Image (tube, rainbow, N blue to C red):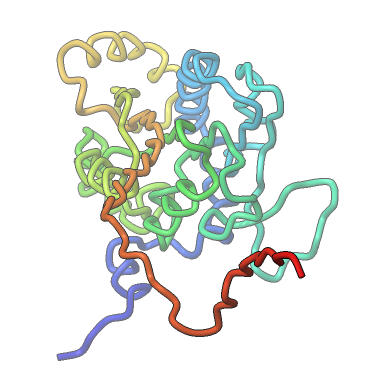
Length: 270
């Protein structure tokens, strides 16, 4: 039986290229009519979420457009955005460059980490989550935007054969699977919020007219949104003290090498 490598196995589910090569294509898609409506809704969701997360350092992995710096709504003191770079890219001192599964960030240094559609476009989603766990401090928060494989977009995906097109070429991950992965890595899922209940049509005018589906969808079918906003918190690892065994020790008596105590001898008279 032929054993597939981990990369080959992921390729069976993820039809996109490596993240550093796919990300510019995803940015182009976000400039479309449909992508623009989705980006606006995601910006509004993060604007309501990030101000409730506190700390000193926040990092957003990847921006979905030239101006998609979603950290501006945060109250965290120091915010930064890391752009994805190809492995052959040179050093640019003006920007923070890297890959999500090999973050150039110190361990236990981030209070908040924002991943906008990073997980489903990576060929190594487990490694991305492991890196997130590594760089976050205990009680730090992970905020993720992910596409939902159980949304109404799935029907359009199969009817029009969009399997190899952006963003449908990605490996859409269900919330139960993500929850299981995060549980194993020591995260507690704080909240999951579905969003974008409109169909993936290209007409901006029609998308805006269907805006009422956002309100209806949240109440009627909350699990069928095109995307999910997931907020998780890294657990504090408590060390269980080991109780010492109090046993009386037997005193060792040295039998050699001891100097005989000096005995003062009084001299009697002559």
